[in-house]
Image (cartoon, rainbow, N blue to C red; front, side, top):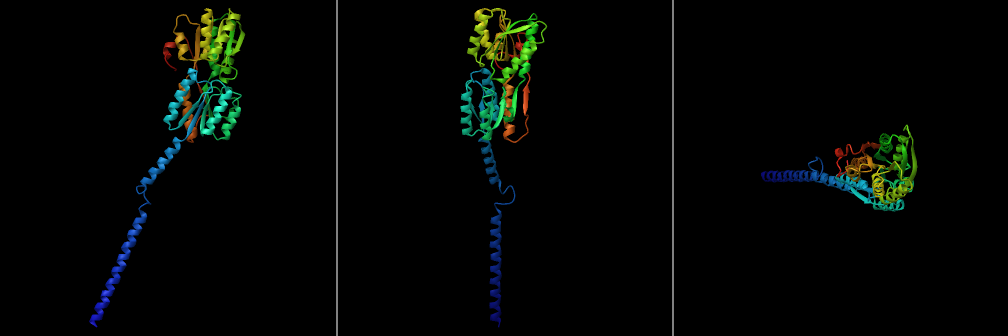
Length: 345
């Protein structure tokens, strides 16, 4: 009997040991399952991978850049200022130069759409002919930031950044009235396909309409905003009207062409106005005998930075201003030293 009780006790101890062993094994198994779930510390590696994926996704966003003419120092400065901020924000920027050709701009916009741009910073060569490209951009889901000169169909545009172009022309007209209170003959070098220049010329002419003594516009020419055409057109105007009082130019590049023609013709009494505040015109203003009366200055640096900032807001889902207008101001011989001549303001 004692022998049997010892056998039963031994069997009982073995069963208890087996149960305890199984409990330990299950506990270890449960602990192992919990290792990859639960607290943020447990999943630090997973979170880092997600963060890296998000950063990579943002870096893949691309902003296109298409403006009127990259031979124009104004647009070169605008592009540099834009690119600096765009790349600082972590985006890629693709620039294409249409060289004042609206057909080339349309082709290049198609190329950028095919390359997968997410937004475009755009200044149209022709404010009307750009419309089909705007439709293509919208159809492709590309956000449109219109800069400097407006497109005609503004409903396509997500945001616009530009200068107060009407005021730019108006202050040139008012300055001319002060300098030539007896009135005189006027020539206008314009570019009807660029709405920014149209607004400047309108402001200039409306300012002259307030003069007590009349100004007569005896000649106007389409320069397409180009130096070479401005040079030729202004030469022909001076030959036809040697007694001309002033030439209003749609931008500073046109004004440089007009100045060259006036200097060659030695038409010392002709006053020339531009719009931009370019380093070339500011250097002219430093000269003792210059025909440049002044330039209504704007800032391509500020404009480019603002366009890039708004592009970032749009792409990252933040609020943004639909319209932004930069102030303009007159630079002439009296204040040119305040703004420097080696760069843009």
